[in-house]
Image 1 (cartoon, one colour):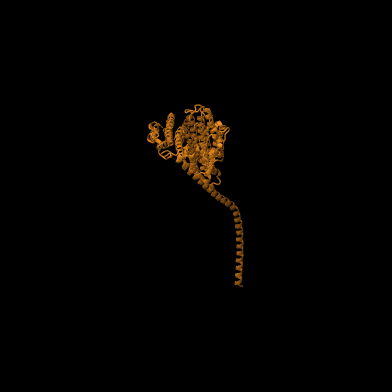
Image 2 (spheres, rainbow, N blue to C red):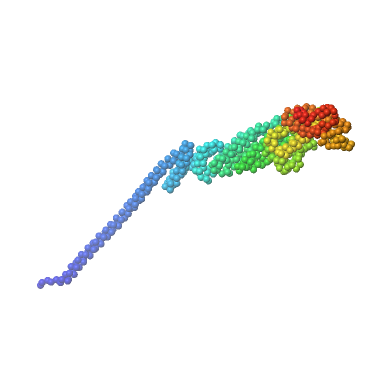
Length: 613
């Protein structure tokens, strides 16, 4: 029998067979995948540490690169720092100020740039910053060395002044002010040292009473001038540098308080401890006041005034103000010790005392400062009282403002002249020789004219007296002129007396034949009695006139101005009286021997006066 196969079954069988084979193949693949997966897991486990190492190496490589770059920066910075170190290690003088400051500025800028780059290299940054700080200190030291010079030297040295300005500008306003504080103590010490060296010459010296102080022999004037000049230079220097006034005040106040007040004025206070020291050294006291007032005004104008100094000056002025009373005691004692006054010792005393007054007047500011401690006439309140006060005073009542220092000073000086001249008047009147009144007057007028000459030649003395003082001098002169003109007054008096007597007698008798009793109309037809009276008048006048001329010619008058003055006063007095006499009786018929009585006509009378006076 033949075998037959179903096609569909055959296909299924083939399909199943293929499916079986496929399943086997999938199983095999799955196993292979498991194997591969297991092996891949093993590989991953092995590779992971390697990747970590690689990553670490890459990181280290980056760090090394960065480190190398940083090292390069450090190397370059070190090179730059080294360059600045070489420059800044040198002195400012060697490098030059401007170049040195430029290098410091550049170094500061470099430091700012390096700080963020070299954070981990703090030693490098600290070292560089220290270098810059030391450079700043060098600049400050250099500045201080520049500022050690005297102000006058600095002002005259433009280069040094410009360097000082450059340093102050470099540090800026705030730091510049601090910089100034660095040299202010040094300048103060320098000024104090200089002032102390000048102050040595201010030490007052004890001297005998008969050797008075000579102006300028003490060093106060030089001390004052040098100190003022130095402070002016300091002020100019501070102003040029634009430094605050307070810093100048620090230096100046120390000099004033430590040296002027604490040393110079203290010694003066101690020196003037008695009236005798005042009298002997009065010009020194006035010189001190004059200088201190000048200095006080100077520092006030510069805004540098010191309260301590002002107090010291005021105290000293008050301490020596009793000097004015001492002057009157000196005058009284001088005349008391002089003995009998003569034409020889009167001018000596007068010149000595008035010349002293002239020298005193040369410090008017000091005198005005002292006189404010007095009221009018207080300087004459003495024990015992001054003798001249009870004899005469040329004071003119209500002639000025009694509160005015100028008026008080004029009154003081006028009283001193009164004291001198009235003491002379008392002396010549008490003289045992018995001077005639005219001689007394001549001595007084002569010496007062000499006083006037001294006054007129001294601008300061003339200014101290002023117009009121000169009026008082004239008042004194008129007093003494009356004494001098005593002989001439008598001669003039004879004319007036006798002419009045004749006229009165004639009137009582009904008048002369001329019908006129006037003393100004020429007389005619005189009675016998009137003729005798006129003869006696001319005789007595001629005697007194000749006597006056002889007395006048005894006076030694070498001063032409004095001679002219006295002659003028005589002529004013006698000429008018004689001319009245001559006009009335000179051409009358009172005598036949006219030449015996009428010795001079008007012209001849004037000629005689001109020739003999």
